[in-house]
Length: 406
Image (cartoon, rainbow, N blue to C red; front, side, top):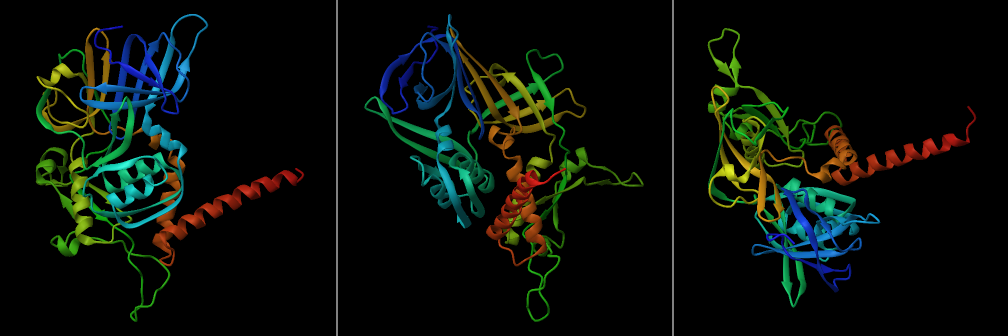
């Protein structure tokens, strides 16, 4: 076994100790913010699907579950394991109406049917979400998305086995450690990816739809005006950054004045002007710089360790004027062998795997928002039920077509 490969303590799916799983050659650990956390390696032994691998990463215990093996008749077994968070795929939530809840309350509610507890939850304000007929892992990712937090599993070990499993929800993982990266045209071993999203130097912010009433205060069906924050923001419903405008704006018609590049964001659950203003200002921090990522060896960041979520100062000298960005380590891939080779992605947060399989849910949520914006009598829960019943009836109608002659 290679000198720097961690020891994998092997347990079966019932947490009973099997022994030590022998790794042949290198072991690759890949992790990203609110997303992938996997192990890939070859082994002399053949673990069963659902077996658990517990290992010590520095001073942090980690637990992974074997989800796939490739077992040739002759040769080594290839093992692919995911973070033990994946066990929440088997925990089901029928319905959780999280209305005006803190992140801690929401986290406790979606972890209730699981064997995971809350290790720590940052103060992320109040928000709301409806979890309906979803697995607990999806619900956990949804809470992280709505309340704006980042998830870390916390594993504790005692008496030779996992003693507890808990969730830590921070505003942001990582720290500022003085890491700095300068990108030059002649740098080897670095890949820069400029993403397709536009850069906005100012954002309009919109919240929940406001009730449409007559002069007597009675509800009237029809268009509902969305919440804005102009009343507490000098009469304008947008926020901007003049420094960003100087770089990413454009000329007006007479080419005498630089003007903003405007975008918009909507927070359909927000009903408070001050919170809407704060949310829009936070969204502008991300929108006002180019969406770019750099895949580099960690040695390019200078001395010191690089942890997932750490903030990094980036100077891109290949651009004129040069780009000066604040980015984060959003992905880390470590290869354990005779030594540890670490490669990181510095930039914007990549779309996590769970989002790739939630397209239908997102479409339903969009339709729900549109329905609520038209008919103020519909609550969030009711509108979701209407949408789902409509889809179910449509599918039933399609089934009925089988009895017809064509």
